[in-house]
Length: 118
Image (cartoon, rainbow, N blue to C red; front, side, top):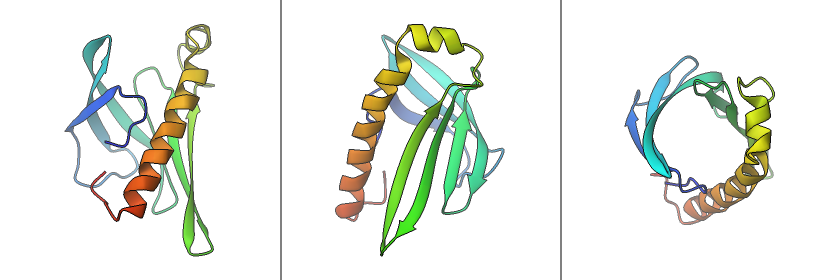
């Protein structure tokens, strides 16, 4: 797993390949184990994928070709989420930023090592 938060434990279900509207289940653990079902809400092949769960917070990866390499951006958008104030009060944007930085570091290490299994 490349997840830098340490909360994503494994994929529980989903299609072999994600596309717009696809749903996938993830086993999570933050104090206690719990399942999450996500839906892909944005998809542009090789450029962007975004998904959300029941709270409607959105995680997004954007890929931009750059001089023989790829710039990867990961974002967390809680602006349309169902619990915006709670997300802010719990400090999740700041926590997620640190986790996303770790995720991107792990992703870079996988790519540099030639490991495409995630």
